[in-house]
Image (tube, rainbow, N blue to C red; front, side):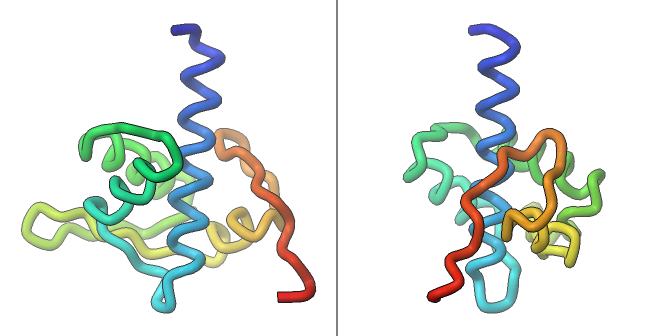
Length: 103
């Protein structure tokens, strides 16, 4: 698998994670739920990969992370919300569709 394809997959996983957090009423989701959501979008990855993506997003200040008995819980930051809403472009995160003004 080429590096470009891996980077594209990682960027799309990160977008799915941010979008999932954006849709949660509390902007907060754990790594097990995120793994299930990623599965539905065709990203069959292990929890370690989900946690690696969350750490990357945290390093970019797009999410905050905390550990609850070995479960990673991610909370969307304002910067992450803006990326999820396609208001801001962030390298390493695939740009999603712009928000629908009619929703």
